[in-house]
Image 1 (cartoon, helix red, strand yellow):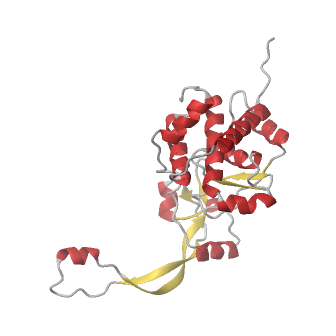
Image 2 (image 1 turned 90 degrees about the vertical axis):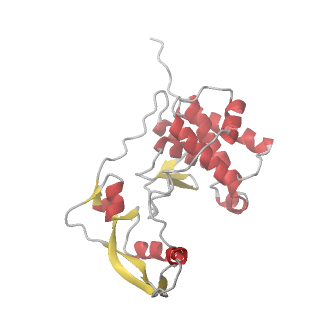
Image 3 (image 1 turned 180 degrees about the vertical axis):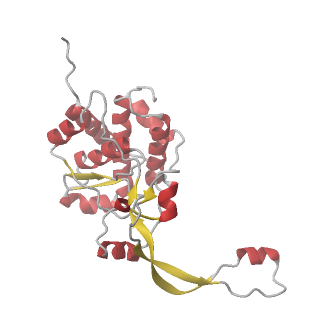
Length: 261
């Protein structure tokens, strides 16, 4: 569990300590936009994966579930020259000759497995925070299982398969509280997305630490996310002060009164 450092020191740790993203945003195949549109045309609005991928994630496809359509490439291997060196043979790739539609993937609702329990944080209540911040929690409707959550306007959605649901909740609340999701802020978000993602994740980092929920794995993934989006950019003091304000608002919104009886 991360030490409860002063927020400026904790944020410095988030910016400088090692981090990684392995096992969070790489669990599902990265389907093309065309395939995502095909999934939507089939009425799918939930994560999609192959039979084997669901199995690797600890879920099994329900008996009788009908596979969904997906576009796959058709590849053929060119005949190798007789005198081709071994290294070139290893590097030679198959030639793309076209695409075809096959039934080879299943939606989340076609599978069975352990479900995420409701987010319960001692001393802090999710629904109380949502009510006080005027935020609505809506169903997750993305076919991309690597997306952990998203927010739009005053609505947030959390992937039912999120690796760190608490971190994702605080991240999306951070976006809303920081004003990133309002219509008039869309252009600014697109222009400065790296900084906005840093702010939301830094807010989550501070809040989880304050609530005693920032374990080593979550912290490492959070720092990896921050480094990925910031690249070599240094957050200005204004952006950091906004993070402190957002974290404070989220903490206060969900704090439960402690009985002294």
